[in-house]
Image (tube, rainbow, N blue to C red; front, side, top):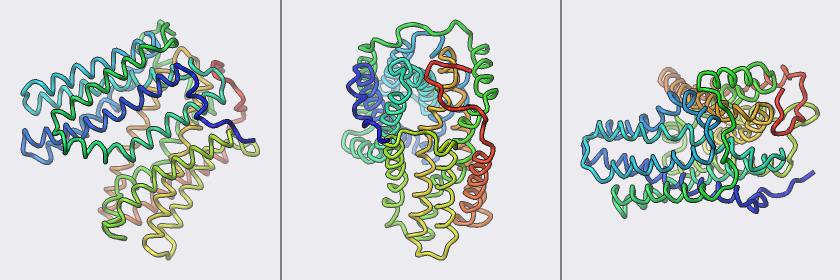
Length: 405
C-alpha cells in the first residue's frame, strides 16, 4: 500500500521550522568547510595543513559523540540546539574577525564542531516528539535524509562558487548567518522545551548501551549501517582513484552523482511503500545485500568499464538508502529518556566505521588495486547482510514510537 508523500509532513509547523533549520545549517557547513580550507591554505601556504581541516572537523564526531549526546536528553532539546548553533556562530565569528595562527584556528574549529554531536542528537530525538506516529516519523526521517543527500550533491558546487566569488572571509560570514538563522527557526518550535531525563552522561550512556545491545532487533538495526556498508564507504573514499584508473577523469562527475541520486531514489521507494517488513524479514539487510551484490557484479563481471563503475557506485547508493529503516527500527524501540544518548552511540560507531572503511580500502588498494580491494570489501559486507537475514530476531517490529521493551 502506497504511503502519503513526505512533503505532507511539512504541514506540521514544528517540523517545517526544524527542516528549515537543517537546510540553512547544512548549507552553511559546506561553505565553512571550503572557506576554512582556503583560509588555512592562505595563512599557512601548506596543502597538507589545509587538509587537516577535514580531520579536525570530523574528530569530534568520533571522540565526543558519546559523552556529549546525553545533553540532548538531560536538557530541553530545543535549548540544546539553539545553544549549539549560537556557540558555533560565535566561534566562527572569532575565527573570521581575528588574525589567528593556524594551530589556534584548528583548535577553534575543533571546539565549534564539538557542538555538532549534541545538536544532531537533539534534532534526531526531538523529531519523535514532533511525530509520535511511526509512519509520520518515517516520512519525516525520509525528508531529512533526502535533504542531506541533496545538500551533498549541490553543497560542494554552490559553496565552491561562493568561496571563489566572495573569498573565505565573507563566505564565513554567510556561515555565521546560517547558524543564527537556524537558531531563530528552532526558537519558534513548541516541542522540545522540556528536559526528558535527569541522568548524568555516564549513566545515560550505560542505559543507552543496554537499550541497544540487549534487544536483538535494535542491536542488528544499529550494527547493520556499520558492517554492511564497509564496501560502500570504501568505494566513496576511492572514487577518484577508481575513476582515474578504469574510466577516466571525465566520468568522475557522473559516477560521483550516481551515489546520492540512487540513495534519493531508494529513500523515495521506501517512503512510498511504507512497509519495514517483507514476508517477515526486515528489508534493511535485504537492501544492503542487493546493493553489495549489484556492486560485486559490476566489479567482477566482464563488462564495459563505465558500466562496471556505474554498477559499483549505484550499488553503494542502494546500500546507503537503508539508513532510514535502521534509524526507525532503533528509535521506535528505545526509551525516550535515552534517545539522544543512543544517537551519540550510533554516530560514534558510524563515523568510526566510515574512517576504518576508508582506511581499509586505501590499504588494500595499495596491495592489490582499487577494483579487487572494493570487491573484497563488498563481499565482506554482503556476507554480513546475509548473516543478518539468516539470524532474524524473534521479536516483532510492530512497536510504536514511545514504547520500550
